Length: 194
Image (cartoon, rainbow, N blue to C red; front, side):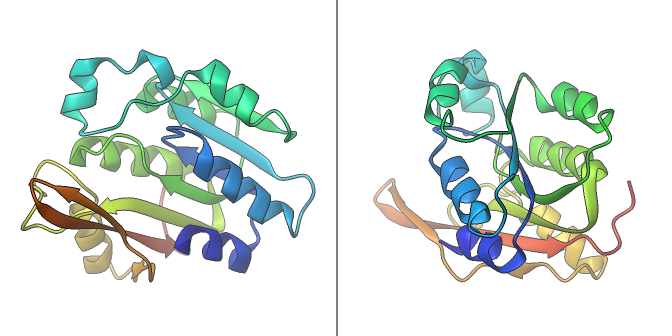
C-alpha cells in the first residue's frame, strides 16, 4: 500500500522494478501511475524461470513466474519492457539506453551484495528527482542483516545525509513460530552521483 501511495503522490511517467516476481505489484504500480499519465513506461528486471534452486537459497528469494506468464499478465498495458538475466548485466546494458527513470523499486535478490549492486546500477538511470524505493529492511533479531536485506544501505544513506524515509506500512509473515516484519524505505534522488 505504501508503494502505491508513493506512486500516487509523485506521479511517475516511468517505473523501473527490479524483482518482478509474480507481476502483481507491477500491475498495481502501472495502474496507479496511469491515473495521471496515459503513456506510462514500465521496465521490469528479473531472472524469471532461470532462477536456480541454489540462487534462490543464496538470495533468500521466492521463485518468480516465467517471463511468458508475466508478459501475458501485463499484456493489457502498452510500453512494457522486460529484461531477463542477472541485473549486474541487464541493468548495465539498460544504462546504455540513456533513459531517465522517475521511480525505481528495488526488490530483487535479498543478499546485501545484490541489493547494493542493484542500487548502484539502477541509480545511474535515475532522473534528478527520482524516487528510489528499497524493500527488505529486516528486523535484525530475526534475520542475519550482515548477509541479507537493505539495512546496511539504509544506514549508509543515512550517514551520507540522504534522509531515507520508511513507508508507513509493513509486510508481516510468520517464520519459525515468530512474526517477522519487512519494511520499505525510500529516498529522493537529489544528490546521487553515478
